[in-house]
Image (cartoon, rainbow, N blue to C red; front, side, top):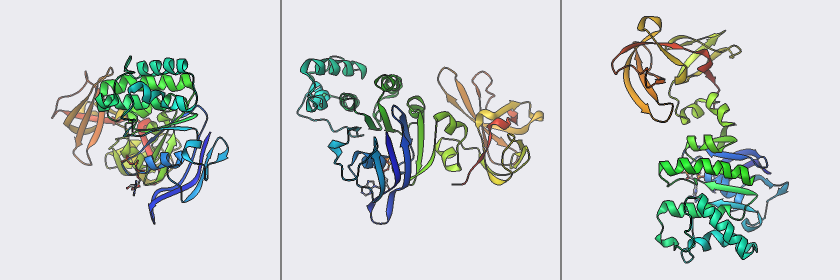
Length: 344
Ligand SMILES: Nc1ncnc2c1ncn2[C@@H]1O[C@H](COP(=O)(O)OP(=O)(O)OP(=O)(O)O)[C@@H](O)[C@H]1O
């Protein structure tokens, strides 16, 4: 459906916003682009939409090279962070805009607009002026407008950026169901990992204009390819280590690693879920330095452990088992959560 081949893009000569990006998006796939601010996520969307001309490389949509094809001929829907609604039209007029351009009949347009407004949590808002909407409401109207013409490729830049948490959580689940139902191909930029996890068939993590890793959300969370990806996902237990056989020598002592882990000096990630609490004498002896509550159904607590030697260690445990601040505990390690990271 979409292919980028060695795409580089620059706003100023010599400073690459995209640097040799290769990416394939299959029909009906939802791909989420994640990455820190300035890593090139928006530029990627702009290049695909035809709003920015790449310096080198190709953008191919449904087998057609898009070189020289203007934005309105690309059959892509794009929703920006700053949503750009038409202030002089009411909500219904905004959502119906793309439908009118495509000659959709009045009755069908009305039904579809009503359905989309209900979906984004603004049922019956057709006649409201957009100037009277809050930022979050405007964002929902922009989303409905981008969805209305059912574009073959829908691109969203932080689609739920300004909404409050409860609404985001509800909308993201509905969006994911909607994308599946409409069988739209989606390329979405988000900085919210939870959102990417729900929406994406595949995530692309970007760093300084390059793709640092791509894979299913599970693959990327379970096996971050590099220290950059691991830290971007919020993992802090990353240390220098030397792997030999089924053991890694680390500042926390000798840790088990999975069979087949390549030997040698490397950076090593210990996922907090793989740190099990024991009696102090049965593991690496640590003091509990801080506890952070993570809500949700499977309420869990992140513990910051201070070993006598070596850097601090994050562990997670259930609320019920959480030891008190200052408690002495032991830490034991599960080799399945001890991961050798690649360079880069
Ligand atoms: N209009 C512009 N003029 C000059 N440089 C720009 C322009 N837009 C983006 N850049 C630069 O290109 C690089 C990539 O920016 P881009 O907006 O694609 O990143 P991003 O990952 O979308 O960031 P954010 O998450 O903050 O939106 C950055 O270094 C940025 O400073």
